[in-house]
Length: 185
Image (cartoon, rainbow, N blue to C red; front, side, top):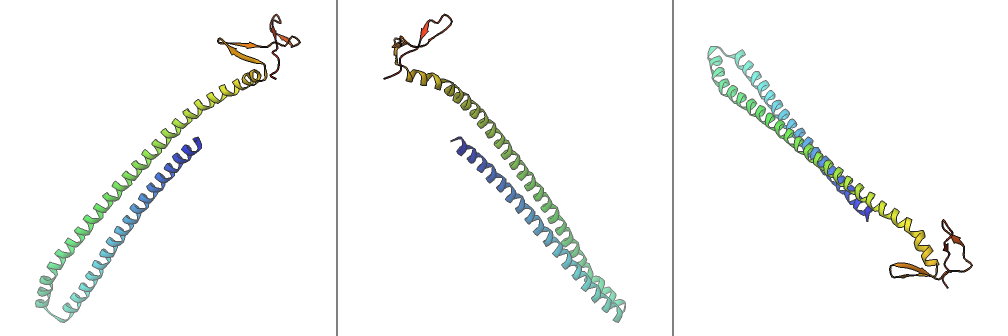
């Protein structure tokens, strides 16, 4: 029964550890996806800026001051939008970082609690095992006495042991006052 309880405690610890590892893996994967998304958005913005620069360069090459003014007018909303997009991407990245740290903290706390619970359960089972071992030793010490009683022609009478003494039996004791009982028939 002790082995089953120990195995159950160990299985619980293993299950808790697996759950904590799965949670940590999910957090890592989510962080990687967020990083990939931010990198993709930044790359897309870089490509848009590069395309915009090429367009502006071709306009500047072929046009005069009016085209420069039109380009400036066209570029202002894009710059504002670009600023907003970068700010939004930065805010998302910061929020994602906070979420990752919260998940990491929660999983660390959960793992710590699981380890603490496992340690407490292990201590309890150690104490229980020690008590059972003490009881087993007491029973083992009583076995020779029970075997000797069973082998002798003796019974309990009024809270004492009464025996059918063997007149030829061996004498024992300080003053050789005790005599062996006859064997059971």
